Image (cartoon, rainbow, N blue to C red; front, side, top):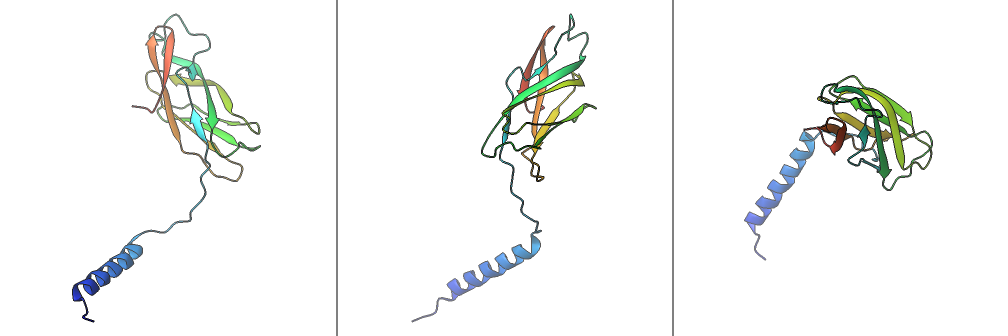
Length: 150
């Protein structure tokens, strides 16, 4: 049976390439994800008692309300973290076992420039994806919550 040199050369190059690729790639410890999603509706960020004009007084204390959904159940000791990456507001609350909703009250923000980064951490240190959410002033007295911070 004749030997196909082209096939042997391609196989050798593929094997060499895979070996070099494995040498060039960094290795890291795989850790299981905490599979729980954070959910916010259009009223997830609210001002409890809005002033006569949010446009004239955009620095306010706001409440952040949302929910969770997903495969992994909220265990006792699960923490919810909130960081305003454009400002100084931050909070950490511990959720009740099995919780599907949460509320963080009294976050001081500038409604013109803020971006909340929110995530959950399980008692064993696993984290959910970090979620970004912000409020947009839509009128003198109302806000609309949107995912992402563009």
